[in-house]
Image 1 (cartoon, one colour):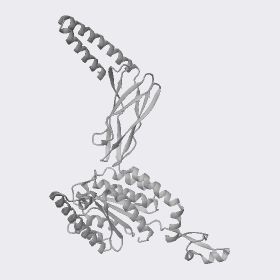
Image 2 (cartoon, rainbow, N blue to C red):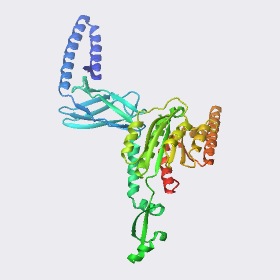
Image 3 (cartoon, rainbow, N blue to C red):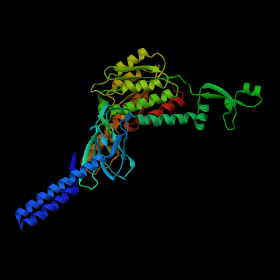
Image 4 (cartoon, helix red, strand yellow):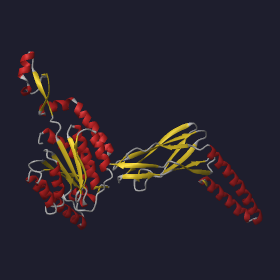
Length: 435
């Protein structure tokens, strides 16, 4: 398709203005000249358009991989120009539900050149989405017309939980596992015997193995490591409170991201990890298993799940867990609370886990609530909003305090920071041998 450019409109406007002036002298002559000019100019535009059609650029979108929810995901194009200088505008048909950094991409290319362009897309939903064809406009050599065409590039793309965050976490855990400082930390805090090694100045003398030292005539120490093959079970609530939007994502999505981060950490530490998702019943249950393949299975099973407007059955879900899991385990319940009255069933359910299991309640707080509670109050409406926020936070703290009084571990953190806080707390539990 050939479309007039701004330069063509400008030239035609000038021609019309000249024709009007000539019309003051001779109307018939003016119309004839204007008609001849328009026909000639239209012919030139067509020739200019055919030239750009013949020498149009080659545009390809790099294959889209798995996308991460709540992250800036890069979408890239390669543009190859063959002969004449080119000015190009690209519009990608991305899913309209997503936010993007740029709706149009524009660039200029010299002859015999290649260039990459990128824009970022921010998915706020999980699931399968359709990318459409690429729309391209290229300005002609004389700048009179745009040649508009479409490149077939339809592709179905799956938006997963926060894969980027999981990759970063895996790298960090790998560095910690192989780092010298982490080795020394495990040497002093471990509980299981690993091996014997020569004593290094500065190490705890209580770790010296005196029998081995006597046999080898120089100090030998016991190397201890963290206890492995413990059991970690994650129960993720997908009930009514988890449908709320927090920082652009549903609270359930933040909870799912943190559950996967915790599962990755547990598997990386050699633990058996199981996971269940519940509302009025447990809708998904994966028994505890070891190995990195367990994370892939968890990812595939949990990615399609969405929160529902149902009140969760904490007691029923915990009861099913108790009936299926007989070995002692760290049981992490990821949910949210309002006050001690609304959370009475949660308290009863968590108590059912003690003392056989180590119960751990994780709640996802809305950071906007903190901002309102800590903000300034210059108007009456701001003062009212701040008082309501403080009251909600106060009731929340009362409910959490009741859980702690019953010997239940508690973590309450902003939803957008919950993954980092939960992983750190889990590693602390492991280091202190609470399980």
